[in-house]
Length: 143
Image (cartoon, rainbow, N blue to C red; front, top):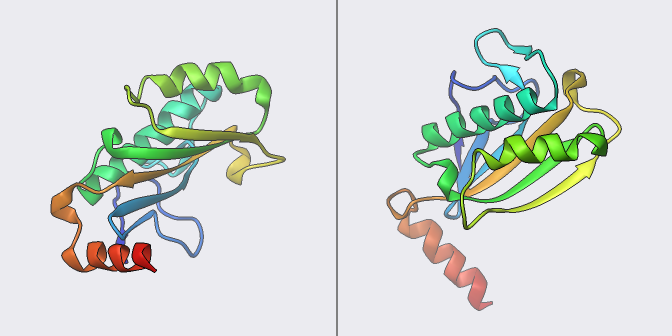
């Protein structure tokens, strides 16, 4: 497991990594719309917060040697399902076909009273996947 950290995304506000790469994937921790320069929640509605959270994910993936094109799964947590259409419109700007799979759920609350939090999983490019991690995956698949 290789931790990923960049100053181009908000620093973790708890005992967790911004992301980790393991077994051929990069797992990005949930990102709320915190501006990495100020460490404050961005102003605006769910559209602005969605874009900020996804820019933070893109910065973390860049540090990991990956891109948004490698994202295979996202989980979106919304403070209100009434924001779904607006979130979806902003979200669509960051992905192209084939789109990653996605789950969207409403939650009672989010850190810093954010309107949205997004986590992502990306497949690592072949040059970032060590033979050891790939052979470990093959052994697990065979058992």
